[in-house]
Image (cartoon, rainbow, N blue to C red):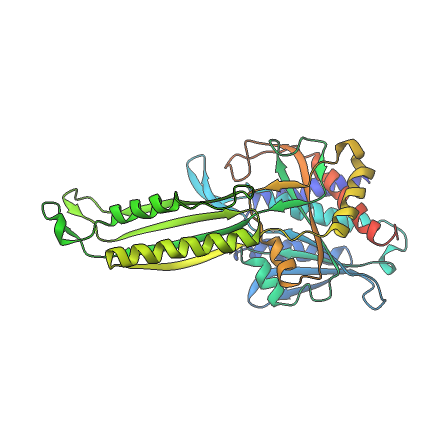
Amino acid sequence: MGKNIEKSVSEVFQHLHTHAEISWEEVETTKYIKEKLEEAGCETITFPDHTGVIGKYGNFDKDLPVIGVRADMDALWQEVNGEFQPNHSCGHDAHMSMVLGVLWTLQQMPDIKDKVAIKFIYQPAEEEGSGALKMVEEKVVEDVDYLFGVHLRPKQEVDAGQAAPVIVHGATKTYEAVIKGEDAHGARPHLNDNAIEIGMQIVNMLGQIHMDPRVPHSAKMTKFQAGAKSSNIIPGNAAFSLDLRAQSNEVMELLVKKVDGILESVRNLYDIDIDVTNYHGVPAAETSEEATSFMRTAITDVLGEENVVGPLLTPGGDDFHFYTVKKPELKATMLGLGCNLGPGLHHPNMTFDKGALQTGVDILTKAILNVYGDA
């Protein structure tokens, strides 16, 4: 769909990749995207208290279905070659670039602007799982009928040259908690409760959770910090994190109840304070067959029926699904794009085939046109 667009998408990707910004700090990214949206004829909306930016393109006065196209903006903060820095190792730079490519492709089509009503939703803080909720709070999708997203997929999930019309993410929950007790001398273990042993108790009880094995799920401790330099002190305090995963929202609800019960049991057993200081997560995908059908047809048109895969079931999470949980009538799906991505998402040196950027542009554009009957 146009060599000039492919070159422009590549240039935007290179800029965003080398100017990565972490969650809620995407200030320069927002300015850059806003400028690009306005240059392409969008009415833009920004917000006084966060970094989201919306581009409205088309005719919102007609009785047309409103389509949202969402791109996540934030980078991860991670160690890359020995130095901590913002790093786009989850592909959000690619997602932003492809969504701009969709806008530019539509812009080149004669008379299309009067036949569509599209919101290009550039959303902050996906990595923290809170950006989509903020956009819902801002009523960004209140008038949206269909919502399309896109995510690069690892080569272990989707081969290059293939794509999935829907990504069925699982639900996630993270607990950050502290054990509050008193230290004791190593020679007097009867004078306190060892925070390390309390942590071991929690780990052992997590391993005894048994639920329906037909629905993938897990609960595990991912961080535990206790003690200091002195090895003859029994620590009474510790900080720990728990990571919960479930493929459905119903199983996650049950898993949370069991984990909460474990923490309460350990509190009572040791008569100690265990305070949950932070608790967050994202819901599992609530899929729309209608939106998925539009995306499936688009993939077929661009790559051929033999290169349609999925539905793609993955234990990873994405706050994209807050949009449908908070607005159940919203018809949404996320394109899973094969691109020879390796070694994996969130790897500090993640790479992928940049030629897939144009493929993503073409598929998303076709999905939009399918909604409008090819406009």
